[in-house]
Amino acid sequence: MARMTGRRMLFAAPVLLVVTFGVFAVAAASPFDPVKAYAGTAGLTASQETLDQLRANLGVDQALVPRWWEWLTSAVTGDLGDSSVMRRPVADVITERLGWSVLLATTAFVLAILLGTALGVAAARRPGGWLDRGVSSAAYTLEAAPAFWLGLLAIWFFALRLDVLPAGGLTDSGSDIVTFGQVASHLVLPAAVLGVSQMPWFYLYVRQGVADALEEDPVRGARARGLSERTVLLGHAWRSGMLPMLTLIGSRVPELITGALLIETVFSWPGIAAATVTAATSVDFPLLAALTVLATAAVLVGNLLSDLLYGLADPRVGFDG
Image (spheres, rainbow, N blue to C red):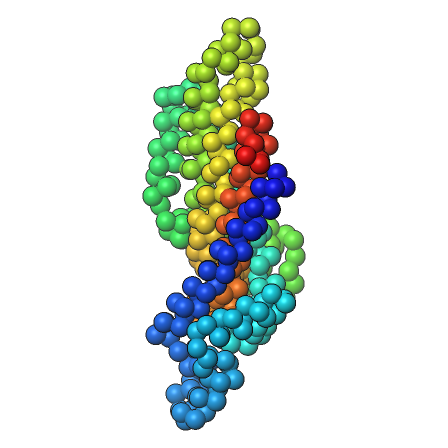
């Protein structure tokens, strides 16, 4: 396990280098002018000399490679630079927003795994039954439904029509204090929508895996020995059928991140979505690079986690092979 983790970490370093360089290259080719975004309306009447001086102060007058290398060497020491559009240190912007994004994504991911697993196991018990047909049809429908559309639909039904849940934000309107109760109530809709949008893949993997496991010889032998159906299902078929699903965890991380950004925007959740959009449209090099590295690192960690879980669940898989 330690050797595989070490190899993955060594592999992650060049990947992150390429990703950060790619961010600076794309941003440099962007038609958006970071100086005008920084200056705002004042930039419309500013002289060219003032704009050139501002460009030098922001460091965007440098060539691509020197600008990227300067940011990289500073980032290694913990200095992520200053956000030109938010006019704050990048580390502060990420610190105050990342926790809320992690809370939303983690809650939704756990919900998707638990709900998909429970429904998949239940449907696999009777393939072709009413539960299997109904949930499978809903899963295929949800696969094709955009996350932002599900979010708007949830707001219309639960917030506007029924008025049982808040439509967005982190706290109630006019509240200056962030309390656990308010955060929990405002988290329900975005986490549920994001979780439901991720659930179909887990359901389909678990359903197929458990259904195949129920047809294997060891499970048939367990039934022949007189073991109860519950023991056969949970003690034998469930574990075998869960193995393919474990590999899905890492591959769903990119989709989870994308979905979280959309859901945060729809529900005005104070995560990194707004910062990402602002950094991209304003060509905020330091903030854009830091957020991209963060997303790439999350994908790499997700892939490593799925491999570790698979190895722990199936002893036949060698970590160091």
